[in-house]
Amino acid sequence: MERTAVQRCGTRVRRTLDGTEDRTVQRHGRQSGAVPGYKGQMKAAETITKAVDFFYAKPLRRMIPLETFRYIVCGGANMLLGWLLYALLYKYVIRGAYLDLGFVVMSPHVLALAVQFVITFFTGFWLNRNVTFALSTLSGGRQLFRYVLQTAGALLLNYLLLKLFVEGAHLYAPLARPLTDAAVVVYSYLTARFFTFRTAVGKDADYLLPGRENPAADEERKRQEFS
Image 1: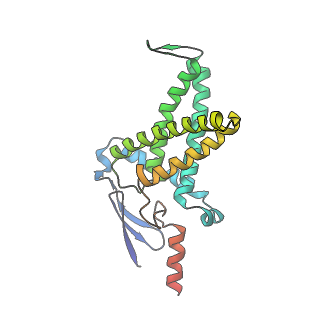
Image 2 (image 1 turned 30 degrees about the horizontal axis):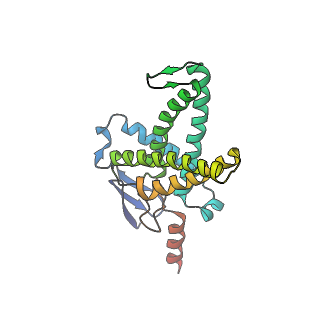
Image 3 (image 1 turned 90 degrees about the vertical axis):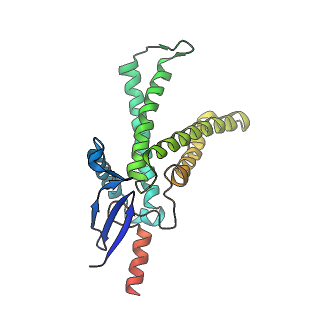
């Protein structure tokens, strides 16, 4: 059986044409056993990836790349997690408490938002790194630093667009918010793909994980085999 070799995130992959693969796990030059909890994280990432890919049905394959689909699903899940965490923190943990930092007093709703933001920042980074953009060859430290910059840019863009829509264009605030969110989502995806994780290396960059290629590459290969 013909086999192809692919270099994935420091992992040498021997992939067969039927989609199976033999791997020696070594991400970014680290052996899996050298990092505590690494195997557990990769197992969780593989399980989540398979669950997300299960819903990547044939009609969707013709409309959006897998990487984009994964970004939408993971981003939506992280957003829902943030809403849930905010409600739980506000009602059961903060319980109307104020936090006096000396230079500023955080009200209960702001305090709940701050704690929720810290948690979803790291869950979002983990999902992006290990599921959506798992093919990135950048080191974890560099990815995290760039993710901080990406998040700061998203917050700034959110603030500026809200001011522009509400104060400049005089749009109703509840209408301006979804427009702002849509622009920030597009910014975040493009920044993540081309800068933070830098997986956009060519027209075939959106191939699947684990053990398969992207639909466009699969279709092209089949056409070549039967031509």
